[in-house]
Length: 141
Image 1 (cartoon, rainbow, N blue to C red):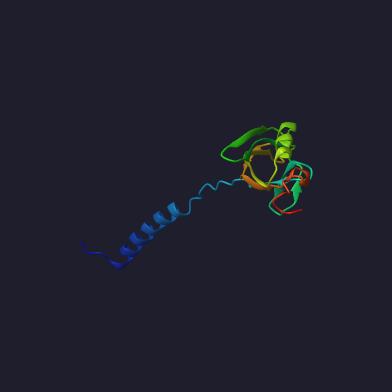
Image 2 (image 1 turned 90 degrees about the horizontal axis):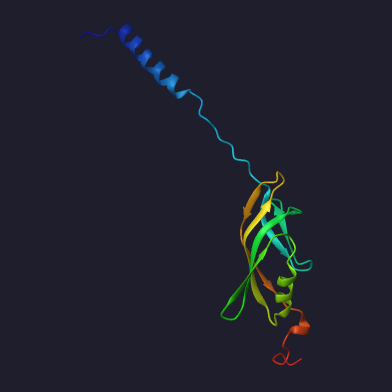
């Protein structure tokens, strides 16, 4: 079989056009909306959780649920919370502490601006007790 240059060019053009037609089909692009909320911080003066946006600004978004873990000697206590403020039971337990203690907020769910539930990362804080609860015998004061 003998190919002439024009026949070869026609065959080559047909082959390339078939490849280009497949390559130029638009692909589906899926866009995921990114939330502005990135984390929650614990405000130890007002005893509440506040959502923080990606620019570091505190927001007043509703914290719908979380678990508070108070680490003690040999055991940890867990409390379930359902709004931004700590419950009276949580505050009572924190006020009973006599020395600095690690507290953990886990499974934090927040409503974003569009009223969708958003899971945010865990928070680890150190709770410092009121000085009148402290044992000052060791420090010499």
